[in-house]
Amino acid sequence: MRTVGRLIGSRRAALGMTLQQLADASGCGKGYLSEIENGRRPGPPSDRILQNLERALLLEPGTLVKAARWQSTPAQVRREVQGMRRAGRIARELVELVKDGGLDEAHRSGSLQRLVERLAPTANIERTPLPVQVPVINSVAAGYPREFTDLGYPARVADDYVAAPDLMDPEAFAARVVGDSMAPLYAEGDIVVFSPERDTAPGSDCFVRLERDGETTFKRVYFEVDAETGAELIRLQPLNSEYPARTVGREEVAGMYAAVYVIRAVGAGGR
Image (cartoon, rainbow, N blue to C red; front, side, top):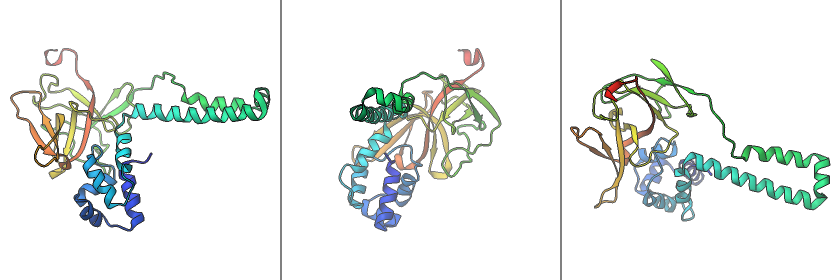
């Protein structure tokens, strides 16, 4: 299934609509729509926004909402579902093959073997991936890397590299902690690895890049809704109680990447 952004972009192009026209018709900002179409948002829009876009694009109700549900499903679950669907298609082919010529004929002709070979990759076989070498971008107080690619990920200019076992995300990056806003869980000097591929669930510790001035920060994130306007909000919560939380609109967040590993020297931070 295509992502929400690709569905919106292809439908808008088919209707001959400009971004501005779609923004006016749906009540969304032009820049916000551009980020959605290009896959640069931290997650799909709310159901309310998607329903407005469905009406503006003359789509069947639920088209974008359904795509958003699939897009928000964890990557591992999506792979398992796709594997089961593929296995189901192959099983149906096997039934037809046996029905047409019988099992013996399917075996003699090699058709049975070919189906088995196609089915094998869908089996749930444990594999041990090689460690990925993750670039350590830099260490900047209260922020992290400020140079980004057109995809919204940090530029691949590394000061150093660290190994991250079981991490297969080619866009993963790491940065050193400076300051104590995330103490006691993260200490100054810790190296935190972030994965753009991982889902950012409520309560995740994330590298966050804000739209305004490209500001970046490392905080625990919580998703909230404004009681009066219904607008989606993201609370950036330090773990150190001496620092205040900050709440921003979801449209202000240009990128949000979950922490997946922390690497520290033995005994660092008294732990």
